[in-house]
Image 1 (cartoon, rainbow, N blue to C red):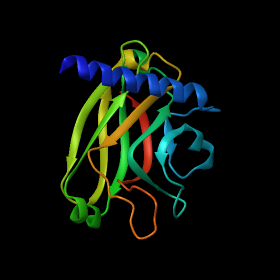
Image 2: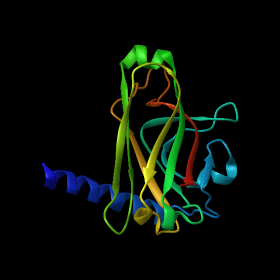
Image 3: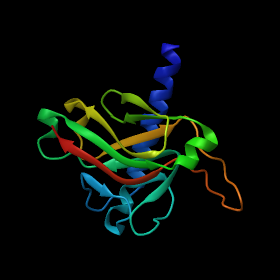
Image 4: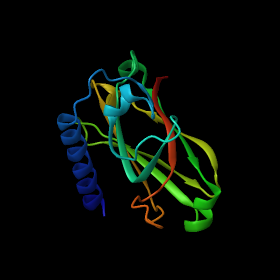
Length: 171
């Protein structure tokens, strides 16, 4: 079991590093306002086009790259993902669990504690990132819901949650 988990983390880290290397991020920032054009290049995969100028739906798996804020390599940081899960989403597929991994070239990655959402609403998924993970110019973070709504009614998108902001804040 432990070997399988290490392999999975290794694959995720490799994918994150390849995506960051291939995905040009012009002037990375620590706070991504999801609908802003200037930060869109930090959204690596799993995000759909912006809606209402403020948010984006995500697929079941999605990732973003964040610039660690000044001083984070000494003090650590907190990752915050602001999300909204419609009541209809929970009614349709049941409770959803979100997990995340802060990808790191030095140790493979930091698996963050998952969170279960049993009802619709606005949430902030907030987790501490250790300072060792922040000794980098760009930190890719991969998020994964345990389930998402399958495409329906001519909409080819797999829908998980609505995200409006992702941020790394210095502790």
